[in-house]
Length: 79
Image 1 (tube, rainbow, N blue to C red):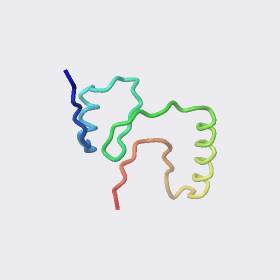
Image 2 (image 1 turned 45 degrees about the vertical axis):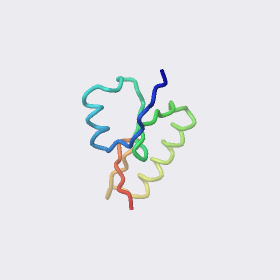
Image 3 (image 1 turned 135 degrees about the vertical axis):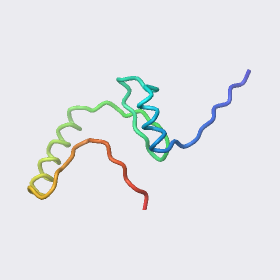
Image 4 (image 1 turned 60 degrees about the vertical axis):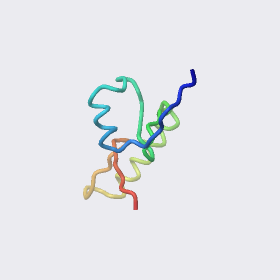
């Protein structure tokens, strides 16, 4: 028997509801990109070092007027 897979885009709300319903495992590193749910690669030490340096530069650039949030969830509107 040939199995057919249905592929479709997931909305942000659907992705969040699936996470709240524990559809994904606690250790799953997933993100939603262009409606697709993709596995994120593990963070390495080189990546972590670059993120820390960039955070230091951005925080110094904006001073106390803003908050620099590093690697937290972000939802960006499509223009």
